[in-house]
Amino acid sequence: MATIKGVYEVLKQKQNNGEDIGMFGESFIEMYEKDQEPSTTKEVHVTFVKNKKEGGPDGKNN
Image (cartoon, rainbow, N blue to C red; front, side, top):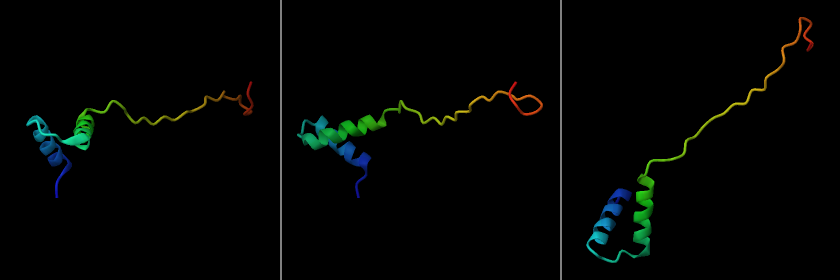
């Protein structure tokens, strides 16, 4: 069973040797190399807390 990296390496070698790897091979190489770039997005969790006015001693707002 071939790995994705193994297929990439074979296709890249064929491309470097000047063999025609077709549109699928070129797309595969492009997507593999794009996937190896560091991610520029981050997952962020945000919680919104609404400020409440403090009430007086009887619990009502002054």
